[in-house]
Amino acid sequence: MTLQTPYIKIDEHGIDLIKNYQVYRHIEYSEITEIELKKGHLIMNWWIPLSLGILIIIGTLFLGILAVKFDFYNIDTRSMRSLLMLEISPWLLLIGGLILIYQAFRKSVVMIISTSLRKHQIALKEFEKENKVKEVIEFLSKRTNMKTN
Image (tube, rainbow, N blue to C red; front, top):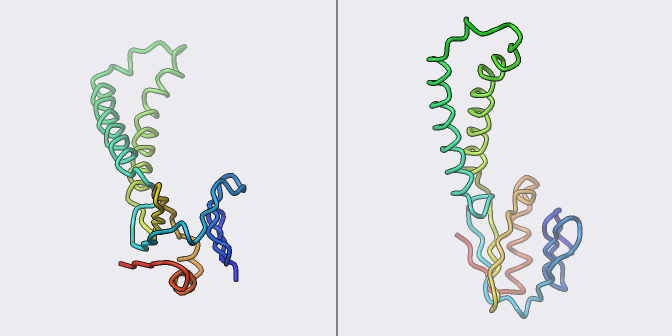
């Protein structure tokens, strides 16, 4: 039996971590000390896009305040492109900041594989969409120490 997504392949030989459609790390079941399944963020360092999104939104508000004070009607018609950029760029930055904040708060089932050397965190979003999380739990609980929250 093989369970596979674009990021992980689970079979009877072990767990393969996949990046760019190539296996970059193979973990034998004997190397694994514990596997934990829990609800977690899809992005490992989720606070980075969150803080960046908040900074972009704050910067956009300041840019919007400066644009309100700017006298658009006395601008030469040759610099119409600049005028357009001054009116459109705050909205684009605001949308970008909101997208970053949305991505930071996205959650799914996450598998944390603990070995003696390091921990690997893999999102199981694809398994969750296909309702195969129980199959993953059953398959791995026969081979390793499983912990579910």
